Structures are given as C-alpha cells and as structure tokens.
Image 1 (cartoon, rainbow over the protein chains, first blue to last red):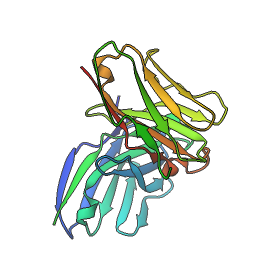
Image 2: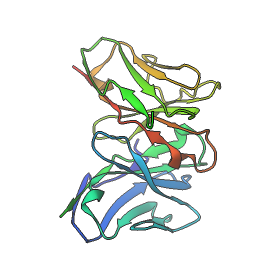
Image 3: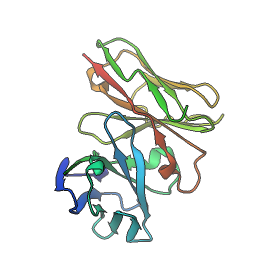
Length: 114
Length: 117
C-alpha cells in the first residue's frame, strides 16, 4: 500500500515559469517530509525538507508547502531552469528516526523546456 | 571514493539464478541502507546497517534476500533463486549515524538495475 503518492508521473514546464510538483500522503503520523531530485544514472540527492510544525520552507528557487489537513505537500520551483529537469521524489517519515520509517513516492519526471 | 559506488550497474539474469549486488559507502559513513525501486513504485526500504549493531532487516521481502556488511565498509545484497518480480533498481545509501534530521544526509549510489528473465 503506497503511503506516499505522486499522482503525476510527468510534468513539462517552459523555462522561467513555475513548476509545481504535488505529493499526497495517507499516514497522519508523518511529521517530516522531504524532496529528493534524481538525474539519470545518478542516485537521488536531498533537495529540501519540511517539518510538520511548519507550513512552508523556502530555499532559493525551491519552496515546499505543507497542508496537513489535506495531507498534501507541494514543491514549487521558480523560475524553472533546464537544469531542473530530473525526477523528483517526495518522501515522508514519522519520528525522524529509523531507516524503515522513510516512505517514498513513485516520482515525477520534470522537463523544463528551454 | 567521493560517493557511494554500486556494482554492477546493470545485471540481467535468468530466473532461479543467484545474484550479488555490491555497495561501497562513503568512507566514514557508519550507516548503510538498501532500497529498491520496482517499475511504477516508490523506493522501498530493504535493510539497514549501523556500525556493529544488529542490522534492521524488517524490509527484506523474503528469505531469498540477505545482506552482509563487513565492518563499516562494503555491503553485499544477495538474492537467491531470483524471480521475475525481483526485477528492480537496487539503491544503496550511506550516512553518518542516524540522529536528528538524518534523512537529508542520505547519500545514494546510482543503483544496480536487475532484470530477471
């Protein structure tokens, strides 16, 4: 049973526009959320995270929004750049400890068109 | 090395054969994890090693799967009598000991793509 869901397998955006990647989760015990970015032939790399005590976390062009009541989070990239083209994974954990407590979504492939 | 190294990058095998996948973590990273991603699925936790502690094997899907780690270095994931449903990308990650915001310091390897015919 997939506890973290990314319902859009792919997304295409023009360079300079906003990219919005969405993620839904089912477990209300999740209290820490992360986004990872993966280029072809490379492993996923950490991008940005948010704790459940916040509803927004910003890092440069990347902002993650958390809506706990809707069990939904989103990653905004503004402005989008061609180098942002990658697969983005949403992940969630509860208690922040325990490697078996980190659950990943299936990923969304973002293509930024020059 | 500078990153997490995995080998082979690609492996094609026949159903029923055994396979070994290798992971070289970042030097100094005492924690090592194996995940897998099957087609259309998210990353699934398989097993976790932390120093000399007993490994957390709670994610291993069956007794055909096993993993070993020598001290704080190389790890080998072994799949015996492979089945077609074992086809996946197997990802290894390493980190310093779990503490606080550990998940954002996982460093993943590029993965080993296993195809079972």
